[in-house]
Image (tube, rainbow, N blue to C red; front, side, top):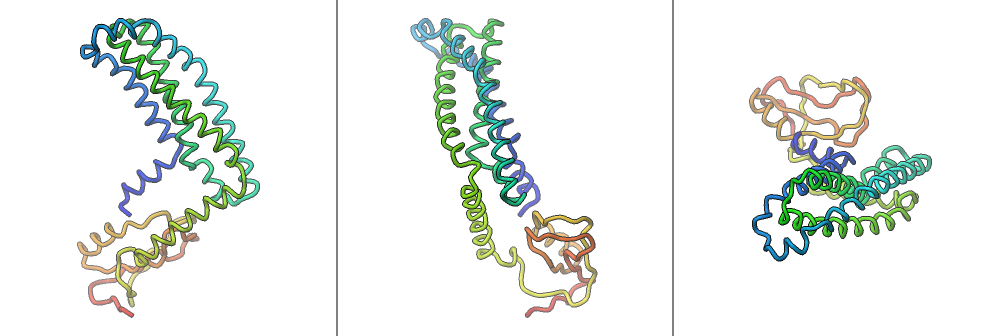
Length: 255
């Protein structure tokens, strides 16, 4: 996999990534609501441009921080519980659970949206049309928060269960095996470098990614051949060989 794509995918599994995106969208939604004020009919602006939006935002701002804090504490408790009954790599699936991340990110994003909205209203940033748009956006945010809250309550019933963790491990393993079946040699060809220099592992750890295209480009630029000796997911000790680099062309033996 391409290095940058791998880094983006790895970051997307982190809790802070999704929470940051939702928070950014919430802040932008609150600030950009004023841009469509000219397109709001006067009758709709008079009806929805009062203090209703501020009341909804105040309720969201006063409650969502506590909800987000409670949800984060529940996730930490579930992680601790799973850590005592499963392996560390399996326990990490708790923090990487997509439904959990979406719920927490929604609570954080909606909280920041409401805080920015209330602040902008008090600073008289919106006109009647902008407040009408903000009110409609606030109703949509309330609906989203309600949906995520129900989803989060449902997820809490199974998040710390060992059976749920085993099911997640099974799903990830099946996906890895299917990827291996589609490309058993990572896009390369079968063979081995008879004579060459071995590239050793600099530190102990798991192989997370192999950028085959980059290795191919470097090998072609230097007129060499590379034999990859490991696969992603393998645990390597310091000093173990990762790849073998030929001294020139013609040293790859197929078989």
